[in-house]
Length: 515
Image (cartoon, rainbow, N blue to C red):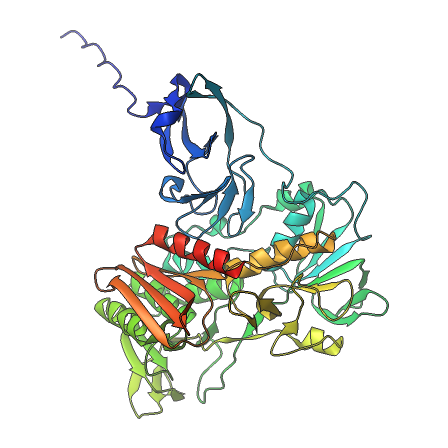
């Protein structure tokens, strides 16, 4: 039997943007997804300008066509990263990498997407004059704020020495993933480092691991490590983050209790999951419940023990807290609220209310405390965190603070606040880097975080330590709702489920109200 001819290739269903798109057919703020050659490309209109960029966010690959155009920027619907449409630069965390861009040519009302442009390597927000800036920058802390600051210093054109002193044994990593996909077993280990080893070499960033700083000498502008080494600095960024609250539990043996803060912590928990089938999670807030969801994804029986009467009520309120509890219960999680672990007897946890639950492995997620000892010994002004001005500078000239330790004047809530959010830490690290270079750019970003529970993501924009009204639009049970936290008629924060674009719009409105 003769060979049959190959069937003809099916036509590419994507719009060929190189063939042209009528500008009048794209509304202001509108987007057209298509291709240029083999590449997926997103054509975006902003006013009279047309731009062509990569269609997926460089952070977690969310489709930017579902996002929001604001001026000459494009905001990601998933985690609120923001990109320049002019250059592709990642203007806001959690994205660090730029978008690819293509040249757009206008011919008699038609936009033609042409060749791909060189990648952006310099920040359009601020560029330091060659040779300017402090003699050196030392960063204490290898977390979100520290890495983002070092990267921004180089992106802004700073050429002098940059050193990160990290107490961790691994390079800066994607910490939100440690309690989510990585712990659940759905994210590969190579995804977790934020940057490769080559990145630090190529950008001339000296990263020292297992480098514990013992003291900061403000007068002589130096820091001393526990091994006796000293590092002089022209400018210093303190980004020491927070430490897990340690619990003393009678009867617990060392291999039974685990905390989750570092890459090593997450690895240690995973190494125990090969034999453990029943777990207790202490703490019913964000980290604890994300851990519970990840362990259920691995098939473990999970008991959550928490002092709160309603999970996450302090941050999200009772309605959303009850919803999250019901969501976890529908996945088989058992809750023991208003209780604590009194003692552990073998593989059994005895609770304060007398209940007994199996506890082959116990993971403590009882909160964190800002790591303030270095700043305190250095004599910096403290107020339940390191006090900084709107440029993130501490009470000592040339010394900045960012991330979980920093308490800054927030123009939206009209109070000095400190928050423990990954995106805020990255954003503050970037802002501090620019202000180290004398950019004089106030940090006034609306705080944002997300929390993942099975197939439900909660996005939260703003900051509300208290409220007098909670307004719910939509249905929490249908995973389609937006929750507004209001005080004296003002919206301080918004939580959303399944309403990504509305979350972006709410964030934008808070930015405008702030101004």
